[in-house]
Length: 65
Image 1 (cartoon, one colour):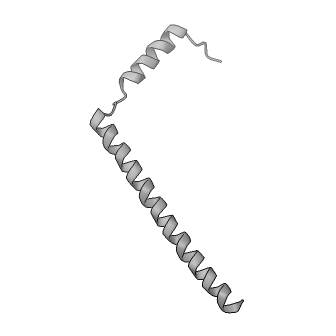
Image 2 (spheres, rainbow, N blue to C red; image 1 turned 180 degrees about the horizontal axis):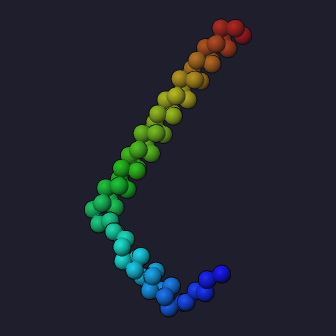
Image 3 (tube, helix red, strand yellow; image 1 turned 120 degrees about the vertical axis):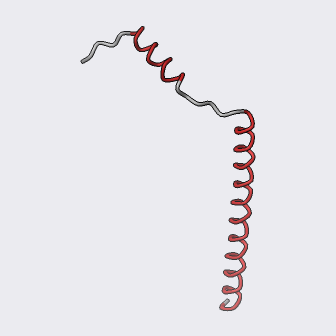
């Protein structure tokens, strides 16, 4: 096994962290708003699908029952 030097590890970690490109406040705000919009649209879609399935099954059961 390779010997791990703690000082070298910390230096390498800091070097990698320095390479990270952090998003701006505006980018974070826009992506957050987009996530909420997409979540609302997805919820609306599945609510409509649920209503259609319920309507269809109710119609079928009423017809045969």
